[in-house]
Image (cartoon, rainbow, N blue to C red; front, top):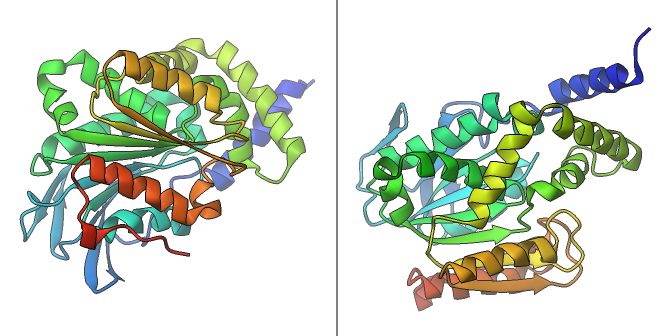
Length: 318
């Protein structure tokens, strides 16, 4: 007789196979050329989960190394750690904020399956991202912008850095600032993932939430130990450059209380932190609800980092 748990697992597996495969951003080809404002941009696939958008339209990629016809030494690099199941058009709205200011952008995505099975998913992505940053040292100014589970992804990166500081300290030293939008800790994992997969179906959210609670208990060695270690590394962040927290007072996935615990930890370690709490915006929905206020916070933070010129401010796009 088939158990109820087996039925749920079978159902979830079919849903994952159907919906949760890595998505190709911008184009299904390895490189696409886009026109944003008056500039030509090239988009290259570093891995299935890392896409690189450059202001240089003559870019080749060899393993993790980016080779451009023009030097990238003068351009900052934005590393965007995306939320679960983010749609391309939504990701690009955020990417365009930085592209218009002259950043090159690395987009990092993760699927729920990759989140659930770190050894074959999220930890491989984290290692790939670290290798990419290590190989491209022309980018002397790296800015992070993480959404939701992006905090978990960065924690996984930090576990690798911590294991070999001599090799990877140069990456940490080049991170001049970091922005966290609706950051979700491991304690919110079982709440946020079901809402990302089935945003309009409370019944399926409940089913997935119950399964994830079981998953975290049953697969401690394969999954949960990595969530806890990543959370620890995120709270004791190796990056000491300034940080901006963007959150909502009504977000159950990345609540104010959780973000403030991280802020307090970083403050105690000497990291300068800035906070903006939006009223009533949804999880990773602050820019959509408050575009002008959101962009004003980004501009102010970039000014703190000396990345802002009066004539080159980020502008909100509808």
